[in-house]
Length: 264
Image (cartoon, rainbow, N blue to C red; front, top):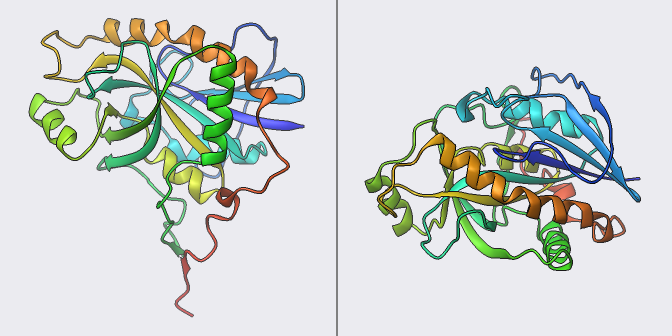
């Protein structure tokens, strides 16, 4: 049976159009995940959905137990994750409610548990290609089949939060190449790589970043524009079973090889 994990951010709480089979409580060595994992099935694909901010959106970005979330998927035998996240547009051409597939990323977080290797093993995980290209191709094929437009080659920058960035910060991020800004990509991306899990990130454009437009950024704005995209996300999700492949090996599976330093 094929399996895929989906991490839902603001505005994407469940998959419509297929029956939810169960809610799974998962225990991990790193504590409790943000919420129970919702299990769905369509054709030969099982879809596991985890709400990153908790069942009632009560967990702030800097308080999320990222290690527990990723380990929960790993414990369930999931080796592919599509992560959605409400994001601010730095690129002025992005439309509110649209989807941007990230191709590279910048980490500006400060105080998060960002590795599984923080005790007796030192591992320098390679991030030369941050996202799984095989999974990106499957996602784009599913989106095209569902007639959903997805912008490619986004550069996502992740800040600590939970405050919104200042206009000066956004100008700086733009200068170093960022096109979207959010608060949850790191360390989620790195932890998935350490577990050998294929991972891609899709930015949901929920607002224009500070200084891009003059409007005040509010919580209602973020939620409403994220919800606009939920129908598109749902259409893509219901198509994934046609394009997720398990016959090919993926470099993500062996990402830990050659990264461990052994003092002995």
